[in-house]
Amino acid sequence: MAAIELEGVTKDYGEVLANDDVTFTVERGEIFGYLGPNGAGKTTTIRTLLGFLSPTEGSGRLLGHDITDEDDLIEAKRRLGYLPDDPAFDETATGREILELHASIKGDERSAELLELFDPPLDRTVREYSHGNVRKLGLVTTFMHDPDLVILDEPTSGLDPLMQQRFAEFVRSERDQGMTVFFSSHVLSEVRRLCDRVGIIRDGRLVTVEPVESLLDRSGKVVRLRAAEPIPTEALEIDGVHELETSLDPGEGESERDATTPATAFTECTLTFTGDVNALLDRLREYRLLDLSIEEAPLEDVFMRFYGGERSERKPTPAAKSVPSEASDDV
Amino acid sequence: MFEIARYDGRHRLKGSLYLSIALSLLAVVVIWIYPSFSGSFEDVDEEFLQAYPEGVIQLFDIRTMASLEGFLAFELYIFGWTILLGLYLAYLAAGTIAGDVERGRMDILLSMPISRSRAVGEKFCSLAVPIVIVNVVTPVVVYVGAVMIDEPIPGADVVAVHALSIPYLFACAGIGLVASVAVDRASIAQRLALGVTFGLFMLESLLAGTDYEAIGAIAPMRYFDPNEILLDGTYDLVGAGVLVAMTVVLLVAAQLWFSRTDIE
Image (cartoon, rainbow over all chains, first blue to last red):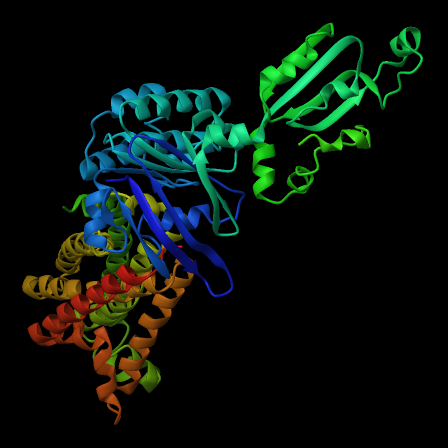
């Protein structure tokens, strides 16, 4: 039994199709990132999962329970933690009173431990809380009953970097203990740091669901290199080189070889590489490099591809601006 | 069960005490001015009620001011209870669900294993706190006050007028509750509840004695009559039953409505 199953969920508001035939499955024990820009329909999917919205079409199950049947869904909610994107509590109550209410309804197995990690000022009223403190209180109420599944809507917005890091470590260790985590985000670094799999939603439609590594593989690596002496550009005419940008230090170029121009050689370059790293290193072996870095491409680039930004349109054309036209047959 | 009702009820304690103090002060003022008021006229009803336009007499159902009971029935119970408290309870109830939905608090509540109808039911139950407290504190003040100005009122009548106001106030709260699930903005729900409750009061008062009097039967005010209790000593238990039934219908309607709406 999967933690979350959605089958053709559509939410039609007449003017807006907030979710359009959304289908995906989140397996138990994985961290699933639900990625998309603001307004893409992430929150609509989450609210449908929780039974707050009834889908116009489609069906879904949460921990095996039908999301359109309130009584059945309540069974799932005993094992569910939920943190909304803008959590709100009774402002006149203290944090402690809120925790007591939650404990009385769904039980409390680990609030003491959670309060060491996320430490909202329990004796103050929520009215006096900062945004970050409200979120910390929300994290405690989300996890205090040791749920099997947590659904987090933009969980780290409003947390300071230290808390974000603590949160990431915490979520990973919970996953290792068997908890399923579903969270939405528009922050790509967060998704990359945490997720096992990612679903990307755009304009209400699910564009893709895949392991975060395969997204990164497809997006390739960013390679930066700097050489002592000019390297002929044709050295990089191999499969998998995209978006090559080069520059030539003119001083060195002139003194060594008259024929070198920025179009035929370079001393510094950055490129996106989707091929075999060894092939690239073979090509570079004969040159003396001052510096070389190979990093995963920023997820922003991956993201752009699904949003039809400029970059994804340029992707099929392998050569970047400074590469001469002969080099453009390298994909 | 009843965790939300207990929680909300606890948070209503303080406000309910302030409310009781305010209404007790109103009771004290009304009782305190009565001796000088009645002493200023040879025949209060003859001279004083003549001065009021007929419409006002009918609107507030003023029967007599020649006794403390009649004076209290108008100044405190018709005005303070039927109108002010009735409106206040409708207003309070209107803020419950709509306020939680508007602020996003409902999301966290309903992510717990709680049905929507239970959430509505328990939030409604918590309104028992102000309704009961105000009706426990004030009668003591009224009874003692009456004795102190040497115009004692039968204790049973004082208890009865407050006890029978309880189903009335719940019915008003029921109106507010329906407004609270019908609209997801608290301020609009509150205005709606105030408008409907006051409208029903006007409807009932102004249609009394006309051919359309039967329409007033939908108003809770028809079933709670302080004059009858304080002046005649008759307790309309059937009316109380109608108010209880009205409350149940409004509560169930609110629960069904809220169970079927999208929470945006």
